[in-house]
Image (cartoon, rainbow over all chains, first blue to last red):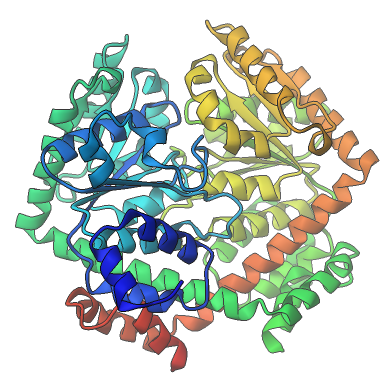
Length: 313
Length: 313
């Protein structure tokens, strides 16, 4: 891909085809990808990033789809990054895979990208940041980051997002106690989806009780719990209102600036550490590693001694 | 902690107090931790590692507890590492937190350690490997790695374990389709826990159908699906039999050797990359990072240029 001013201008104007090509180029870790990202970076900073996470089957994709429709109706441009390692959508999913295109404004104002995370050596966060920057530079008002699970990828997304929405269903009741530590820390707001099912009120009560147990000084803001039935588009207005309220909260308390700083720090660390890995694992070092595996297996050496050897070379 | 032959001997003999102290010492990343791990490494290689994973609330801890009892009854020594970021157990949970000590043989032959994963920069896998090595060297026949989610931490554990057990419940039905890609790849066997609940047979049928769709050349072995009701200790014998069968399968096909090689490779990479990060983030580089965050915020520079500056120093 050529880094011409023409291409940069096209991306900034939201040319879908070029955005898509650029993301693919960057995902493939081409050598000059930093030059492209540098050129785009000065155009970033406008998009508000919404992270949507929760267990598989909670309805994250449906909620995302509803949010897209609502935001587009309100005149916004929306980017979506689905960093769901279990996502049935693979590669560069087109909009049509996700949202029924009954409305041409959806086609014009939405860009959806699915990202595979599997198999990469801790590569999730770095790529997500890069793709976020591209979408941000392309004029999106909102970027939705959709991810799954209660593991590391979720934490990474929480680091990248401005508002993190944790989606649960009434059936998650059993697991709330277990999820406590993990979710309380990252959730800016909770959604109970499929709220017409049995157990919805119990899970909300349970969640609210738990939220009240938190240390007051750390959590001056009450974490809202929103009911939705995304499959029939119910509750999405409330959800968006709460996201907007959270954004205002961040802005009026000065916490947004703190968050932006932390996001930048995180981004630089990711870029540096990806570079460190790439520089270290030369063909020669890879070869030395391969040659010593059987020696370790036979206890003629050990992983710690081998890594010291690799460092000493 | 002093690296004396006396201390090493104590660990090898299974001295709980010293094992616990050593793990804490290693988790705190003390400078000479490699020396301790080197001294222990030649005593490793006997333990069989069982990974237990699945969504929160599936009953992983109960299944682990049942497996512990069964293995100890059969005369084995068992180590448990709970790498659940959402675990309600914090720090170095003692056995009593997990298993009711009605039997003194449990107290003698079991060592349980909970590990926090939150907040560490990709530190999960490295520490898990180190703790595994310590428990392995201390004479454990089995090490159970218990983790949660469908995210990165789960994949890391699958890389470390010899047999990976994925625990689901009938209520997971909705999400199987969504979890497909993620779980199929790592599961050596499936457990449907709480199998007396509605929907158990449906989920088993769904799972088996999906398993049959897989490419035959990659999966010559049929992935078993075991029913359990762990809360009333049902089905655990079957589960252990299937684990033993998987172990035999690995050993007779030569796949165990391949697996061990991949585990060692993974371990060395983790040690090296932890070292790379540690060496790079000197006080000076951290300071340069901090000083440039506001410049990035003001678009006077960008994360890519800053990381190049850091590399060039």
